[in-house]
Image (tube, rainbow, N blue to C red; front, side, top):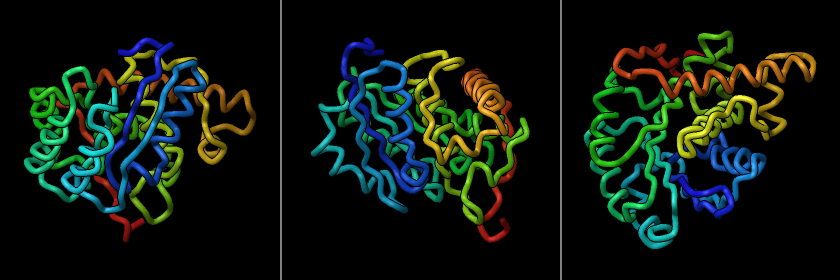
Length: 231
């Protein structure tokens, strides 16, 4: 992990599941709100597969990024995702931290631990935002508080949750009690009528994120993702 006084260069790579919730922006805000110097960029295109990012990553980010966070579009088979992720990882040297942002949309027939093992055998770590998402649902949040109405993509509140999970994972940081640095559009989704009530809820969210990082994916079960047409 880079020292806080150094500028850490981070790139997010993916599709709607990354850019629609503005994860990169939320991650940068959390970093800067807590004294971490970062430069955050993204290469995100709606509906894009990881393979479609290869040339851009090769020309613009190889040799630049300290941390790379990737996400595959949800309808690609696991074997293709692993192969394409390995190719992207091969563009960077061994000092670059490489992560896969694993969301509930990435859950292929509960093959969480198998996929995680395939990635980690190749030096690609998991950021399990899927677990953070499920723990919020288990603790009273509604699906529509995390997603736009009629849509399975993340809203800015879920984007913030993913950013916070990413922050905790890549910096090996305890996020309980840190400055939340949450955008107003995400903050309004936090349970509570008063500022004090929201502060209590934010600390609960921070604790759930830390709990999520400790969950054993081999025994983890997630609710079936609602289809857009049924919301």
